[in-house]
Structures are given as C-alpha cells and as structure tokens.
Length: 533
Image (cartoon, rainbow, N blue to C red; front, side, top):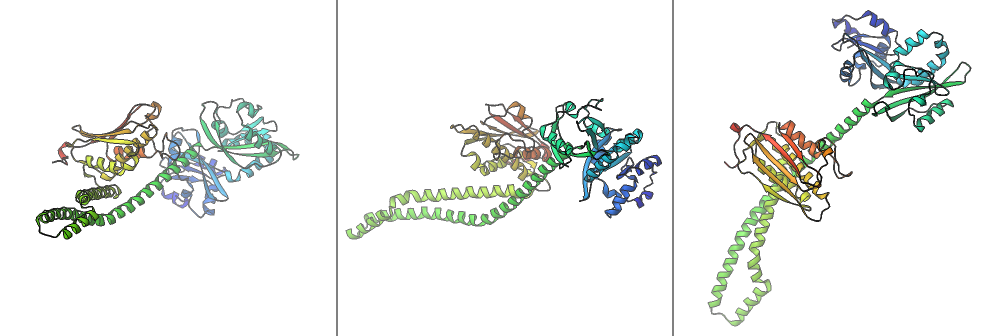
C-alpha cells in the first residue's frame, strides 16, 4: 500500500509509534493487525521513491510467514529475513508484535555494515560520554552487533546479539569472547586479521549452540574500529543467524529439484505416450499378419502331408521320386513341419507381450484425469510387474496372488499404477542389496476387505532398521548409496495413496526379515462393481 493510499484505509496511525520510527535511521514500518501499513518512516518512503515503487512493495517475499512467526513471541524482536532491492541496498528486516497485535518492522542496511561499523568506531568515545544515547542507539539496532577490545573482551553488545546468543552469561562485559563461546581457529584468524587493520570478507558458517547442542548457520562480518589517536582499539562483529533462511533455501532447492524431476517425467511420459501410440499400429499389423501366417503355415503343412500320402501310391519314376526326396532333405522338411507352427506361435506371443507393454505405457504416461474413474486394481498390478520386469527379473522371482472378486475402485489409474510400480521397484532394489547368489522373491497379493481393497507387496530384501521405519516415506530420504536411489519413489507412492486417493500405506520390516508394504484403498461398496462381473 502506498503512502497516498494510507488515508483511504480507514486506519488511524499511532502518533507515538510514528515519532519513534521517524527517528530511526533505516527503513521502518508500522502495520495494523490485519497487515495494512499504518505508517512508513522517512527512510522507508525515501527508499520507495528511489526504487520507484510503493512502500507495500518493500515487504519481504515471505512477509506473511514472518509475521505469523513473530506473533508466536509477542514482545520479542524476531530477526526475519534478508532482501536485496538493488546492488547497493540489502536490508535485513526484523519483526516485533506488541500486545495489541500491531507489527513494527525495522530494517538494517547490511549492505552498508562497514559504514555503520565506521560510524560506531569513530563515534565510540563520543557515545560513551552519553550512556543514555548509547543505550538508546543499541536498543534500536535490529541486528546482532558486539564491540571488543584488542584482547577480545566485551565492551558492549546489542540486545539482538544477546537474544540470538542467549547462552552468553549476563555479566559478559569485560570478559573474553573466547572464554564465553567456543571459537574455532578459522574465526580467530579472521579476528586477528581485523585487529591488524584488514577487512575480512563476510562469511557463512555453522556453529553448535553450547546450551542446546543445536546447529545454527550464522552470517558474520568482522571490522576493526579505531580510537581517536588512529590506533586500532579492537573489532566489531556483526552477526545474523540465518538458519531459517538456509532451511528455506534447501527446501526450495528440493522443491525445485522435485518440480524439475516431475517436469522431466511428464515430458518423458508425453514422449512415451507418443511412441506407444505410433508403435501401436504397426504392432497390430504385425500381430495380424503373424496370425495369418500361423494359420497359413498349419494349412500348408497339412497340404504337404496330403501330397506325401498321394505320392506314396502314385506311379512316378524313381528319378522323380528321388528328386522329391532330395528337395525335402535340402530344406529339412521334417524340421520345418515340426517347428514352423511353434515359431509362429512364439512370435505371436511375443508381439502380444509388446502390445501389453504398450498398453501399460499408455496407461502410465497419459496425463492424469481430472476425475477418478473405475479402475481394475489387478490389471494395474500386472502392468506394474510388466513395466518393472527389467528391474526385478535379474534378482528375483515374482508371485502374484490376486483376488478375482475385487471390485472396480474409483481411482486415478495412471497415478495409482505409478505408486504400485514404485513399491515393486523398491522391493527389487532391496533384494539386489543383499548380494545373495540365491534369487529373491517378490509376492504381490490383493484382497477385498469389504470396505477397502488391500494391496500387499512383500520382498526378501535386506529389511529396514527400526529407526528408519518412520522415515521411509519422507521425500529424498534413502539409505542407499549415492546414485542408487533418489529417495522419491516411496514418497511419491505415499502421496498418491494418501493425498490423491484418501488411502493408507504401511510398512512392516526389520533387518534380515521380509519387508511388506500394504496399500489400503477405501471404496463405497454400493458404487463399486467387479471387473469380473
């Protein structure tokens, strides 16, 4: 909301709050409980003018999320996020919610940390002459900053510093930073460089909190400060805990990787569907022609038999009879009569298998239907086994125990088939990990339980440790070596079963024992038919 629009919002600004914000040197905003901007201080308005935008557009990308987080801790300042507006302006926004639910936002221009450090360093002696002014300044600095002498003893620290590093003792002034916090050698080296007058580059690192043992990401800047005589009096350390941002970045990267993978799979699915469609017609021609040849071969072999019977009683010369015998021997007629029919039958069987594979590819590759449709669960199981044959055939035998009384279940057949396929492939991978010369076994069983259909997939793989059972459906979680599993197969299966179909998927396993995944798909008996009826 621009400043011109504030008057139309019907919200009365708070004068005292405005006065405080107007004296703050960096952009600051005061928001109503509903999120409308009540007041923007001069620094915020100037920034909006410089960027040729509205004050509303100054809000961080995940503003609503940060407000919600701040509301969990009213009265406390929450360091929220960093946003780059242009190469010269990088602001860290902090949020504070008062007892009435109003939100105050302070920004620190961290792109100019060195300027702020120089200001603090040059003004230290003057500020120390007015303790009240110094305390008021530190009270309003929404970043974690601490000042040290040459021996790394604390001279002062902002409230944000003490909030973020709450494990520091309250009587920290005059104590060595190194005695209060375990500081690794690379960080100490940066301090030494700053004490020599250098300005080390900003850095991001992980540290372990001594109070909880939790690991945190921190972004820090180390700068020297000088006394009035020009000598270096110590260093300033600016720190920002960026753990939440790092977690969000990693989650975003995982989401983007998942989206890229999904887009890739969708492209492959479209390609596969197109190829399957194009192959389908010639395969049908081949199948029809093989059927014709199979029948024709049988007829011709029968005709040859009739000829041979007639020749045995025919009055022909021995020379002619010998020529016929030689011709039969040259083509191995006995072998042809025996094998031609078998070859034609096997060829037709192979073509029919290819046809089933093409049909399965079409089922899996077609875009998801907007509405669920009656699906034959047993057919989806057979298709999944057919499509995954190259994964399980080298290491395992499969056995199916399919309930032919299963009703048709309203489902998205392509997605449900993908879930079954992922579980079967996971079973094959588990068996392969055993490195057992004896072939493993995958058993798939379907059952009608009256109110739901049950699909159970068991394998004789390595089993799953108890402490991993609760994580097998987590995205990107895998116990396999790098390159041997993306950690997405079971997660996708879980999402399809639970979120898309309102079902349930369970895992029962322990190391050295068979693992069983059970898929439960509810249905309404009054609307379900049977594929066999």
